[in-house]
Amino acid sequence: QGKLVQSGGGLVQPGSSRRLSCSASGLTLDYAAVGWFRQAPGKEREEILSMSSSGSKTFYADSVKGRFTISRDNLKDIVYLQMTNLKPEDTAIYSCATGEYTDYGLLVGHDDYWGQGTQVTVSS
Image (cartoon, rainbow, N blue to C red; front, side, top):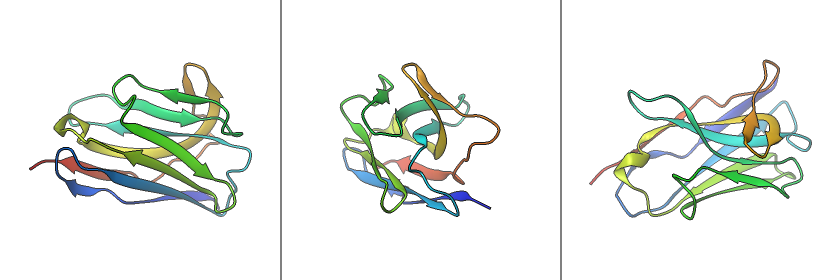
């Protein structure tokens, strides 16, 4: 049975950078669009980045544009979230997922996969 396994996260200082990884186990990401979501305390989950299966299209939420990037290594079946200039308001649980790419964001269906979630806390 396939799954997505996340790593990275933790406590980081404002202005610093951190990379999250999302590794596929028991499945391939070659033909899957992928995305990153986050949920801050007391708020709804929001999609922040997604990328088409080919890597030719990328969706960015305004809240992270210019600071976060998504990349993928299809040979290793890993998706990365590179975060720079982190702010306290970026504190959230971050999750990766597979789905269908659209220009308005990733559609995650019942047959798609979610990572286990990783806490990122931005605080001095």
